[in-house]
Image (tube, rainbow, N blue to C red; front, side, top):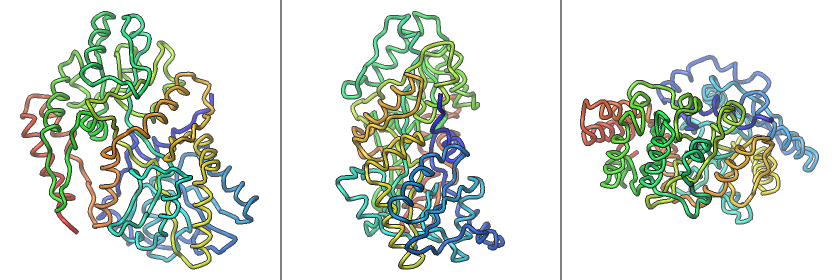
Length: 442
């Protein structure tokens, strides 16, 4: 079995969410010696030679290696691929900007105000209808300039213990076009738990991203900013969060995940849990680690909204270092996103594509894994625009010099689940945390 896609555990952190670098930390890092940035992997290429920075675990750069070799053969341009350790990547980019030695192309985890003004406008690539790029997940500035296009996307999703469902004789939806509601899913999962003697109906990542996905699907916007930058929660969000907290009753869901950090993935993999709300990054691991029961990805609930919380697996950018290199970088990125080339990248690296209609053929030997990726690729084009809200909001915050250093969601809802405060008070505190860190205008 070829393992693909696990780079997210290093590059994105658990749950596939891009982690924005706190700007204070970036500023501190900028005071470090700049000589480290110019060690043979600097910038300022030309029409025949470009530098391309990525950050991924060894072996998970297969797609990029394949494409740069192919591009050299086709276009005669040498694209020098430099794989930088994730822990130092944002700092190295920041320092490179200060030293005027940025790469020509990069796949970055987040934007940084120090170099965002040097980015090439990728609008022509994003708007090319042949590419069929999902506009919900682009990073744009206030003028509409496309600053980055995802190298790939990540999405929340639902896993089930298929063995338990079959044992209980409970059916599951087979198509995202005809999916279940959260109410229907919980009813089905509880029935399976009762019939099979499983310990819990559902485990649910202790993750704001996973909660946002559920809230979106139940018609809410979660913590959402108005035109002035002030955050609030709507009535549908309050109803959805109240429902979620109520599920943590140590029968339907264990309280220990959101109150004390118990591992929901390990619980699911034990075979004693009916279902697990997590995301696509789990698929490669489950393909090899789950042996005691059959598992499956199933369509995400919609009540009534078809949605998820979708994030960029990485953000592709081009830097305007000089005229010749900028033109060459633009041409290379245009070539990468041509559907036939981008499909090759997704297949070799195990990416969920940001382009619709590609139908990548992944090298999994696990039928469950193949079916899971097929399902995610079918679902993403159906998601409502709200699915990309947080992904875009993070870009807006960075361009305004702000970042959500600490999302209060986990702490405040953990208190509500423990009975230490009401759901309304938890949401009030979460909103206050957002307004304090990233609220207001520029």
